[in-house]
Length: 179
Ligand SMILES: Nc1nc2c(ncn2[C@@H]2O[C@H](COP(=O)(O)OP(=O)(O)O)[C@@H](OP(=O)(O)OP(=O)(O)O)[C@H]2O)c(=O)[nH]1
Ligand SMILES: [Mn+2]
Image (cartoon, rainbow, N blue to C red; front, side, top):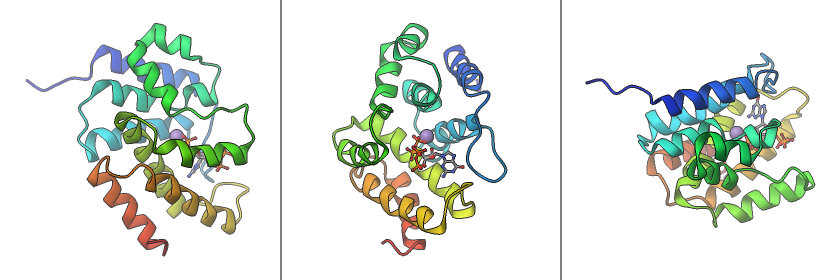
């Protein structure tokens, strides 16, 4: 029988689409924000062949606490502690200065659990694929280049997690002369 998405997974999609409904990405086309989280979960399912449903659900929810009014308590009540804890692992503390958040992403990457590392790798892969073809609104070329350099530092601390995703990221870093 053809597998179908679980009700839990569908509820995640619906919840993320609702919470991110007024947000747009920074690309010139102002893509709906939810496209990004769908991309991240799809990268994990299709390109990394991940079947761990909590990981695929957490990928859909990975920016919902960082960027909307959703709380970890909401996620735990709706989707359970396992999914909630994964989202917690990949959520930046928005109360910190931006430079400190960027530094912590590099430092914390190595300490993250293997399942959360998968989400972080797919997140960076989607952001970098976008940056290869778009310059976010208001960004200079230099800022775009610095994002590639910073993302490589994060990815370097996530290695040994998924060969396929790491090969695809390395292809991008090679293209940008960083490898
Ligand atoms: N490439 C790209 N990025 C965009 C776009 N729109 C929003 N973003 C987000 O912008 C972040 C990078 O911009 P920065 O200036 O470094 O960070 P900031 O959003 O905290 O100011 C990425 O977050 P991140 O911390 O790297 O990851 P995450 O927040 O997605 O988890 C990415 O998700 C877009 O159109 N293209
Ligand atoms: Mn993201």
